[in-house]
Image 1 (cartoon, rainbow, N blue to C red):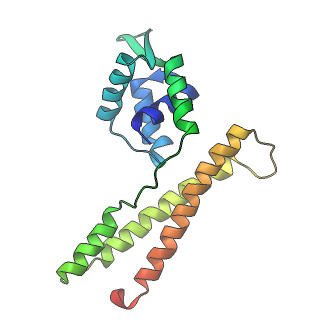
Image 2: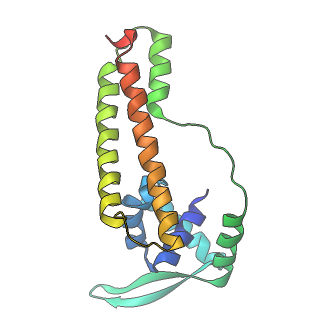
Image 3: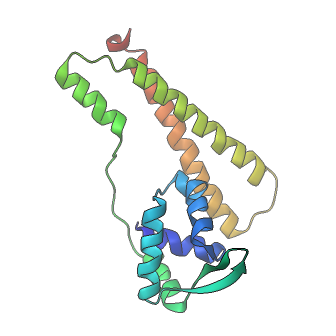
Length: 177
């Protein structure tokens, strides 16, 4: 997936300014696709030049704020991408690399960092579960769009749950006792 598709998806959900888009990436989109504010603004400029999005100004106290909306070519690009096939992506996790380096060095105790990461993953899981309870209560009729968004959230819940189970297993192992 590329940043272009993530931005198009977000702007189709709701046209907004670059600052609002960056805040969305810091919140909901950031749970599964991250980008810096600089990357977002750079990509918005490219997408505008390519005719995928258009900017229009809204008056603010400091002048005009540019809001972005998706044009037909942007929608078409997202539709084609969405209907296509994706690549299987390998795991890219800094903790796993640290563990490998600690194994090679043989002198680094990585247990404290593993426990810290475990705590961070517990926090993320709690956030996901709170979102699920709030946004997807049981027994409510859902649209296809709601079901797809819930499936994305559940993927995050399953990921965090399995990561925590793995972490617990490793920390209980002989190398960490």
